[in-house]
Amino acid sequence: MIVGTEWLIEATGCDADILRDENAVRNVLLNVIEDLGLRSIGSVWHKFEGEGGVTGLVALTESHLACHTYPEYNTATFNLYCCRTRPEWNWDGELKSALGAEMVSVTKIERGEIDPRSVTTDPQFQTAGGQQ
Image 1 (tube, rainbow, N blue to C red):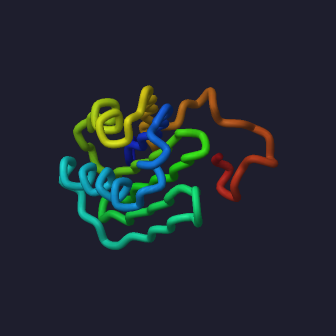
Image 2: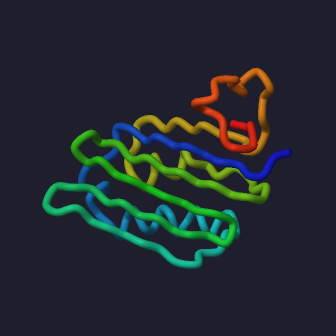
């Protein structure tokens, strides 16, 4: 049973000045929310001092969307978790346009689907119910 889908995104080769710009990063998250028809129920943002980056977390009725930027490494990372099926967002094109990213990697994980081969019998990694 699939209970949600999670996307892990790495954008590298980004423009460091954009990664320091909280409004630019907020706009990326707002575009994801609008384009996918998601609903925000609140957010938390932090701009690190000086040459530091931006961290943002948007709580969604569907789950969450988060971003962390690392201007010193020209990198931004994103995490989107949705408990209902959503269309794919054009992370590659959008992040290249908005952040000047040279390369974008997207990993999609279906959550809740347990592969019996991945369940460990080591008691150290089991919960009280016996499941991992």
